[in-house]
Image 1 (cartoon, rainbow, N blue to C red):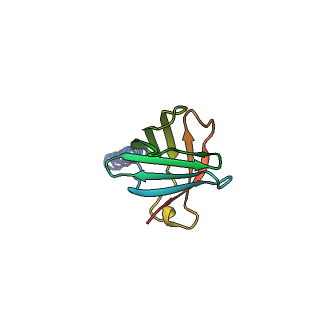
Image 2: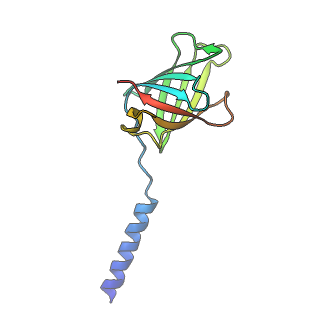
Image 3: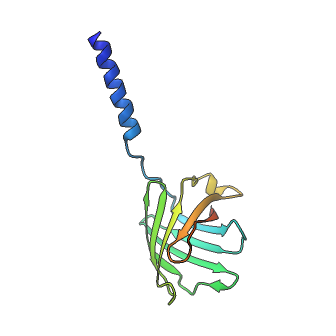
Length: 138
């Protein structure tokens, strides 16, 4: 009976440890990505994600085109959130902080016709996340 009780206790503790263990950070494949906003299809972005956690970012809209060389900075991934802090060649936005929920990003989704649908939040520019279709360029 003691062995059965001890076995049950160990099983319960292991189950709790698996549930309580922190989830691993999601990864994103280095490469060139194109993103298009889902709502209008008129906001287009280009992201170069590098293996050394650096990123280059350019955006274009009907009434705006980012000056060269675009924004550059670094990114980190915590859980399913990619966060990037970049400096930009803009007087109205010299530094940009971007958060992207990459929970839907897989090697297959970024290569699909639709792309991975990702909510994007740009601090200082948007109050709500905007959904973008994210595709890797091969």
